[in-house]
Length: 450
Image 1 (tube, rainbow, N blue to C red):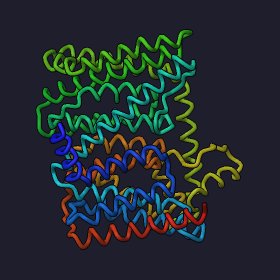
Image 2: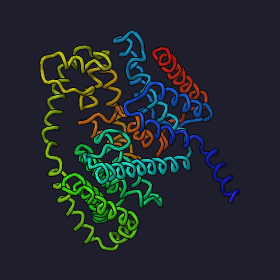
Image 3: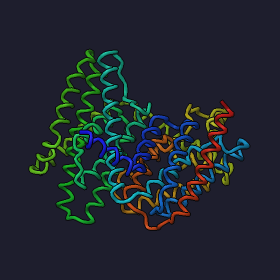
Image 4: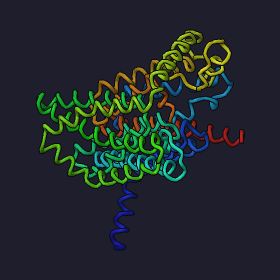
């Protein structure tokens, strides 16, 4: 037994870079939109791990725009506040560190990172389900599941991204099937319509990628199995929600949760059933329309919320040309929105990330983000479906500003497939040194301010 423990510990030492990234994803998921001290300490840890790597396989069309974006954020912060820390430049530097460190991984390490991402999102889904059931059954409080991220919309897209990562693992023979219903049930409990639309976008991208290598018939059958799994998993999550929030006996959600536990235990059998019975898979997939309709009925305010977001985007467009070079400055749009005499939306971010970045950080930062978006969508990779879902969500929400969500998306973009350009050890160490200096500056400023 001691020998096995020792071998396991040695394995962790050998894959320390993956462990550092996994710890980073865990920490960033808990800090929401960011805590300067925590992010800087984490960034220094990632840079320390990066100093030990000898090369990185990067995509320059992702790395360089990320670098330009962060420099533009720093410049915008300085122009608006007279220093570089009161803004997004320092905290969003963690994105560059995560991407670069993930690009340093070898092939076996990339597979390990993928599994770690799937397991972490599955654990977050399990926590969220448990949280909802406890609040409904024990405390009599019900509402959309917010989970570890503290926001239902953010939690929804986080679990959707985890589902696509898990599907990548499954295609490579990963033994993580029981995690899938946790992700699907958890996503349903958030009732995040933006996340559901984003999931549909990711599924379309996944089917388009599948069609490149398989026939129309095989692609159709794969799509039916995919949708059949989503129907049962999300349908069960919706049942738990309705039992806990829409009945006079919220404790009844315990029975629905027990059914969900059985579903987790039998999930692999369900997958084999769908593979053996393609017609049943098509029928169950068709029933997904009923699940979607039930979700819309369960959240009748979704249409009004969407209309409000369109109005918010229109408000943001008015400020897009105020300062095209550096923007109006980080955190300034809310103040402008409060004083302009129109509808006050009481939020820090326009619910369209590209537009918000253009307004607050300027057109250079916005163009850099657009370049990353176009590159990720064009670049074939196992994480492309997850990237598509993430990008669609950010056209109508603000998940980009949740550090854990964006870090997960970048780990998928940089860690699951090697880039085409090799950076030598000197270049890698220089980039990590610059990032370490940025994080050290932020840490010192945070200590002075506190």
